[in-house]
Figure (cartoon, each protein chain N blue to C red):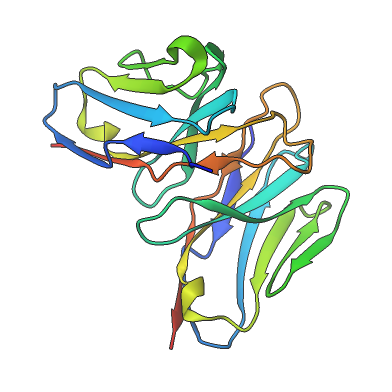
Length: 118
Length: 113
């Protein structure tokens, strides 16, 4: 099966510019997550969609970040305007079920978008 | 909220030796502990997980142990091979309504031939 795909794989922008990251989850996966890893640190949760609804956006750093998932399929994460501290790897992940109580449940990650803000 | 500490940040071992990565967590209600492996340029992938009703789980050369009392869990890789070289992340799923995985900061494992 096709995995979680993210685009672009790398993005280099200047401070103040806008960048939009895209994530295509595995087909049929209602749950879509965004995470970020700043260099050398932990993978930090940003937000969680169930279909098109934001289930939990407690990890979003500030209002410069906007995530959407129109139609409950792919998702976009826009950073506007970008700041230096936004640099890092942005991961998207998807899962069919939620809660991890089901032993068959797994979180599938994309390869990430390396964002560099100069 | 949950806080996961992971050590060491880097680990080098000779091929054939064992490697151990340790994580501690803060939320005593956490009940699910997965480990992810990220090879260079690739996506993180689940390699093994353990739930709080089990103390140890093994899958071929990898094993995970959980000590609920001490709130720590460890990944053990035996007979390491060069293809084990990667960044390994531990994670914990806290109890309560805010059930999102909390990850550790990662361990860069290098297996020297």
